[in-house]
Amino acid sequence: MTTSAHPRLPKMIDARAGWILPIAILVVAIYFTTVDETFEARVSWTALAASVACMLCMAAVGYRLISMVTMTAAVHMITYPIAAVLNALLETPAVRPDLWSTTDLAMIGCAVGCASLAGGAVLMQRGRSEKRFLEISPGTGMVSVSANLVLWSLLIPSILIRVMIGGYEDRFAEDSLTLIEQTGHFQNILSYVTRVSQIGMYLQLFRYMQSRCQKDLLIFFAMTTSFMLAFLPTGSRTAAFGFVPWMFLFYVAVERNRWKALILLVTLVISFSFLSIIVELYRTSDQRYASVGERFSKIGQIAADDVSAEEATRLRILASRLADYVSAGRIINYSPQIIPFRGIEHLDELWAMFVPKLIFPERPTLGLSEVISIEAYGVHKGSEGGGSSPTMVIGDLYSRWGWTGIVIGMAILGAILSGLDRLCLRKLDVQSVILYALYVQTIPAFTFSLASGIIVVLTRELLVCWIISKILTVLVMRTSSTPITSTDTWQKMAGGPAVS
Image (cartoon, helix red, strand yellow):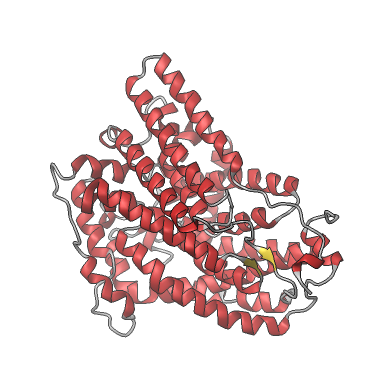
């Protein structure tokens, strides 16, 4: 049976509403211009240019939410123009004064980089139709709850590995870089085990979207809540709830009931901001020798205090947390006048990504030497523990080859991501859900990582995720049932009556 035999489903929600953000930033820019706040006005106008460039990236791929280009642009939007404007609106910016002074340079870097990203995506898609993405594949079955729970249960070895290598302590360690170096041979294993356990949650959510059964939904929320609570004491946003935005973005993109999707999206933005503030405050407390119970008690206390906190305090914490652009601004300001362009420095270490550190512990930890060298710019010192400001791909490309590096590097990245959209996200079936669950958490690397890290994500990580998705698809499909071949099931996927 072909797709055309089924009733036409309503269109998916897309990212066009994101243009509200550049409009809001325009209002802020006009305000600062009229009140003669010169630097804040310059920051706002350059942030406006950056936000427009981010939206052009989304436009280049038809505003599809489930697109690697769109998701990369969204992360840039949050950590560059939105973060900059939030800081400008504060009475005193939440970032250090010396880093705030180069915010406009970071915004220009983001504008140039994202415009180049959009250009690369457009070139890759030229002459190709982009109408058929995430098509629901006829014959796709619902994976059984038991199979989803088996995958999710890998949460247990994931916790045990993290405890064994000190993963519950590294956010509070005095020397976090040394701890990373010592435990590096376990990090990749931990990452894959954790992501495979998350596949169970993704497939359970996909099952609910097929069945619309409240029992399936309750099981999904129980799995998700347990996962978050298990890793919340680590103080790591990525471990505890870094998967949440991508999981619910998947739901919002596929959900044909626009009101449900919109309500969930607003709820996600509010709750994720709230959690980010709580974890940021939690990480500043010393929990190195605290028990799990004491850590949960501290988190509860912080959450209670945050509810009664002033809005200005919350906004300041959020603005500080989002302002990862500061490294890029400093690097653009310092290069090459103070620190010469780095060229291909440390890229000769890329061979290390093909050698498991568990087998060859002496091999260098990929990217660690670059983190140390980036400290020369005076933005952060990761060896002092706690959080740090990432270099950002725009900052790394500029530190190597200047504006030429940003333009060419980001254009190549846009073309590659657009191509991966076509290869990996064309159909909505079990394998595409599994591959999305495995690979989507590498998306932030296209904003925060160094060039070497991005090369690893686009080669080794993609290959490993594809192989795992193939194997797991074969295994879980043995338990599948109720293939999507009936009008009734398609109506359920639509969230209501099918559109004739």
